Amino acid sequence: MIFFARYIPNAISIIRLISIIPTLWLFLKGEFFWTLILMMASTISDGLDGYLARKFNLASRLGSLLDPIADKVLISTFFIVYAFYNFIPLELMIIVIGRDLLILTGYINLRLIEGPFDAKPDPLSKVNTFVEFIFILLIVVNLLLDLNPLVVETFAGLVIALSLLSLIKYVLIWSERVLRALRLVN
Image 1 (cartoon, rainbow, N blue to C red):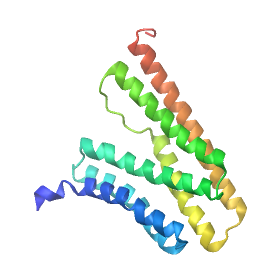
Image 2: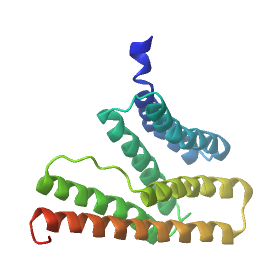
Image 3: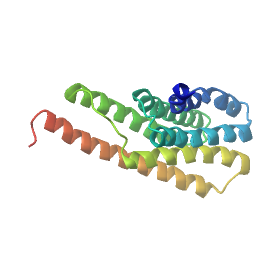
C-alpha cells in the first residue's frame, strides 16, 4: 500500500488531465451544471496534488511536470473554446496562451544556456493560474446564472493584468539569468 501511496499526487494530476475530455464534452453539450462540477473538482485537485506531495514528501520530477501541464492544458482548452464561442474576446485568449508560450520558450532557451535547473513557479504566476481557474469557472457560472457583465469583465481585466505582470516578471528574471550566464553581467 505504501508503495502506491507515493504515486497519489501524480495520479491526481493525470486524472485532472484526462478529465478535460469529459468536461469539454459536457460543456459542448450545454450541460453547464456538470461542467461546473468537473471544473471545480479540477480546481480542487490542483491544490490537493501539491499539498499531498509537500505534506507527505511525495514530490517527484514527474509530478513537477504533470501538474503545470494539466493546469495549462485545461486553461488553454477552455480559453480557446470560450473565444471560439465568443464568450470571451479573442484578445484575452491570445494574451493568456501567448503568455504561457512565451514563458515556455524562455524556459527552453534558459535551459539550453544554463543546463538543467529547478524551475519553481513564481508566486505571482501561481496567483495568475488560480485567477485563470476562477475565470473559467466564472464563465460557466455566468452561463448558468446570467451574472452582471461587470463581474465577468472585472475578472477578465484581472486575468489580463496578472498575465502581463507575471510575464514581465519572468522576462526580467530570466533575461538577467541569461545575461549572467553569458557573462555579460557581473
